[in-house]
Image (cartoon, rainbow, N blue to C red; front, side, top):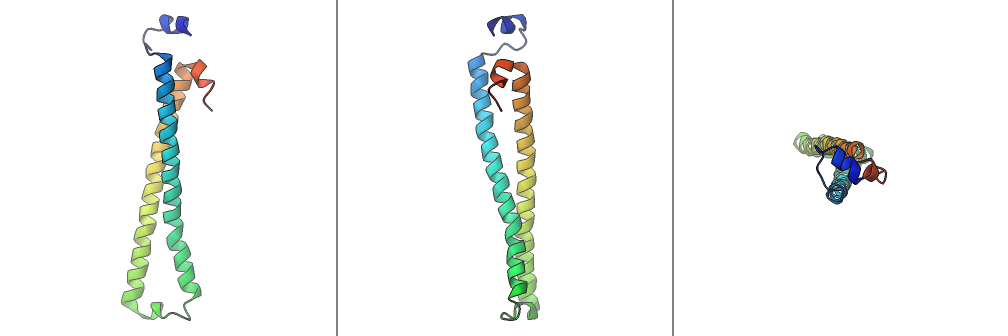
Length: 116
C-alpha cells in the first residue's frame, strides 16, 4: 500500500485517515437512511388518516362541514408535502454519500475491499 501511495503523490493521504473518513461517511449514510424512513412515514400518514376518515364518514360529519374538511385536507396535504421534500432531500444526500464511498473504493482498493 505504501508503494502505491508513493507512486501516486497526488493522493497524499494517510490510509488511516481515509478509513476514518469512510467510517464517517457510512455513519452519515445511516443517518440519511433514517431521514428517508421518517419521510416515508410522513408521506404515508396522511393517506392512512384520510382512508380512515373516508371509512368512518358515516359516524363523523367532518365531510359535511366545508371549513373543517378543507382544514383537515389542507393539513394532511402539508404533512404529505413535508414527507415528499424530506424523502427527496434524503435521496440526494444518500447519492452524494454513495459517490464519496465510490471515490474511496476507486482510489484505495485495499480499504474499498472492506467496504460493502
